[in-house]
Length: 296
Ligand SMILES: [Mg+2]
Image (cartoon, rainbow, N blue to C red; front, side):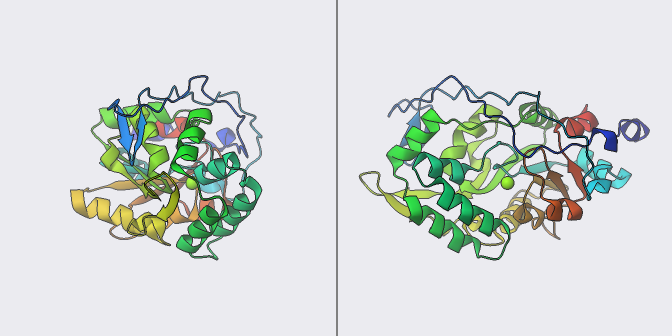
């Protein structure tokens, strides 16, 4: 433990990044029915996307956050992090730099209207399922549009996440993606990061026979308010994990920190720093390297 404590990240390293620069892979994803590489609800991708982690030369403001006192983890927090046998990651603004639904909506020409709903949904004042249905109804994405969006705007992976997940997997820690976003858009990300597709807990867009938008699967726990907490509890119970950690940027990620769910909530503020969430987190980091340092 002494070694770990000596490796602490100190507040001088705290920084806030409101938005990282737009860097996208030059490689496209290709739809290829029958390729067998990736498939979900009629979507087939032959070539794994050439993800590019965003460049590290992001602007660092040296200012301290009002909630930055918990960027110094206690020994108990460090012990829990190092002992974890399962880690659940939020996707939007955590594993990836973007909010997936906003990207898809923007691609479909409904960006500003949907972003307004997303902002409202994040306040927690509207039931998640209501906000999800309202946002999707504004642009009703077809399967073709989802495929085209993924091809032309592949998700941007957060700096350091690939290394962190690689290290967790090397320690035999099971890794999950738990998100209110769409499974269709996460499978290629999971493939890139070495996460089994069955470890994705997310929403499912439903399409008709012609690929037209029909809705989303309301049976997915993540389609409802409090859904991430339910998903994390389910994961823990199903596999009997002793120590489970949740990492994310939002209030719904924080909700997973409860008896029977996550033992530890780490707020990742490298993309979006939400002060209300950071203030209640066990540990606040703005760079995944801060977590990697304790695993090395
Ligand atoms: Mg998020």
